Image (cartoon, rainbow, N blue to C red; front, side, top):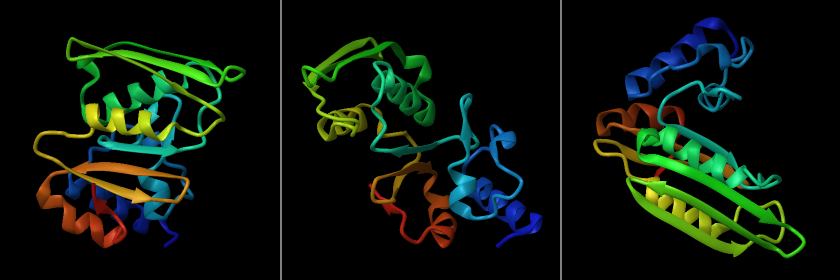
Length: 170
C-alpha cells in the first residue's frame, strides 16, 4: 500500500471499526501502512481515540510513569476520573514511586526501577485500573518490545482484525 486512496481506505476501516480520528495532522502524508497510521501521534496526543501505543523501554525521566498513566486515561476515556498523577525515579537507588487518584481512590506504588524498561508489575496494575472500557473490547497487538492496545465495539472487531490478524483480545 502506498497511495492516498489506500491511506484513506485504512482510515475509513478504523472509523467503521469504532475509532474516531481526532488528530489527522499526526498522520504523515507518506504513511500508508495500517500500523503507522494507527499509531500516529505527536506531543499533543494520538491520531485516533481508544488507541495506546507504547515502547516498554520508555522510562527515562521522573514523569514518565505519570505520563503513561495519563495516556491510559486518555485512551480509555477516563481523563475526567484521573487526578494527581505523579511519579519519581531514583535510578541510583533503583527505586521509584507512582501516585495517582482514579475515580476518587488514591493509588500509590513503590517499586524497583533498575533501568529504562517499564516495570511489568506496575504495568499490570495500570492495566487493571484502566484496561476495561464499557461497551468496548480490548485488543492487543504485540510488537515484542511493547505494543498497541485498541478498544473497539464488538461489531468493529472483525473488520479491524482483517488489517491486524495478530490483534488478540486481552
